[in-house]
Image (spheres, rainbow, N blue to C red):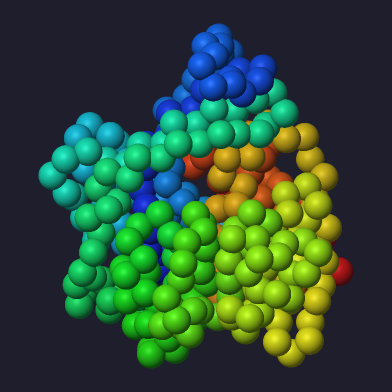
Length: 298
């Protein structure tokens, strides 16, 4: 089977992750139990996850000129991702402050840093998008950059998966270029005004959509009439921080390899489940063998 080519355009952050029995309330100081510093950002996470899932992956993003930026590039490259077009911008890299409780739930604050400077894609960057089988994008970078990449992909016949996180207003030209929209319940409510009770509402935006519901699985819907619930894979949850990124990346890889989209969602659900068993973002992203171990075909 030819190796799927995935291009990811998105954010790169250094994740500072602290664990505690519970998440602190406003004004409360709480003693934590553990701390890790790992590369993150939805774009970088999805690029690493795609590479670990078996794709040939190129990452288009921006890091700062600080020590975090040096570490980010080294770690992303070491995961097998092509970072030859990763920009270095003078100033700070993106940083995410992540708090995780004993149930694996989290609260996250992100400062974009260099990610906000990812504008004006070059011809070389656009050529990488056009050469891919699947483009994956999120919304932690300027929306005009996501739009430019998606429009270029659509014109070249590259399939486009948009993980619309964090939710924001989406320009019509971006929506017109999206093949599959991936959102969680909160994002679905923000974009379509409805969540798990009516996943087909997302089809007002794009021809195909996946609604992820964490431990309750995921819905796949399309304008051809499909409405399929894929149950979650049951595992012990340690940290859910990057589960959505593992899911989206595996969906892209599976679809690019020729799986139908419902089966690709099943494989992606196994990737998300494999991810939540470990602490941290990029360090928890599963390799292909871990996904296959949990994958249950229909």
